[in-house]
Length: 302
Image (cartoon, rainbow, N blue to C red):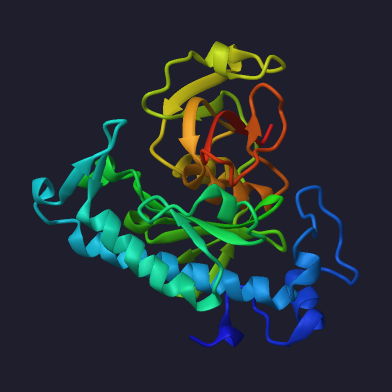
């Protein structure tokens, strides 16, 4: 696939083409979530190539998921994790398809279904992928909407690129530090449509996980009034996408996530000036921890 017809519309090489296509003027404007800690040493066009690779990887994984969707579900389950969630043969096949595409650029991959490198090794990584090849395995096995593919490219500051693929709706949500969020079709990765968030309206919408135990009064930041919100459960990383589009106003969670569950959504939200934050400290999440666990978080567009 030729990069000249990429979603960013970049047709010139080097910094001039990057700035022109993305609407920036050199030097690059500052953004509170667009630190150049690593990108200052990386060609800007290289991030754009990572974006194209991630889109292709998401499309490859989605093809696997859609191909197997009608198969006998009880034959797909391989094992059950300690938290009770299933692992299917499709998780592993999607992981393999995504890994094969991401390998083109050499950045290491942390995948839910891959072999986890030792912390002493990955703690020195300057750039790496965080991948969930099938977010919402139970929804997939039950033929329910809500399963997705999550791919994030991270540096020391967190996600600098995020992609969430929704195979059933034929959509990929994406955003980078240098590109505001957009969607593309799985069948046409070059036809990008900018995400234009819906205007705020009451009642506000709070989206949570299906197993959320707290009430909206306990989940919401103290500055917000619970009576102005309706609370609804939504599967997987699509919660972050709904905040990006304005279909939801806040996503909050009291229990733990793994980093690959939220890094892609966080990357999309950071591309529009929002960050997923810790509910106690209100600081943006950090990644590549020893446990790879995050939790007690929220993301708000209000």
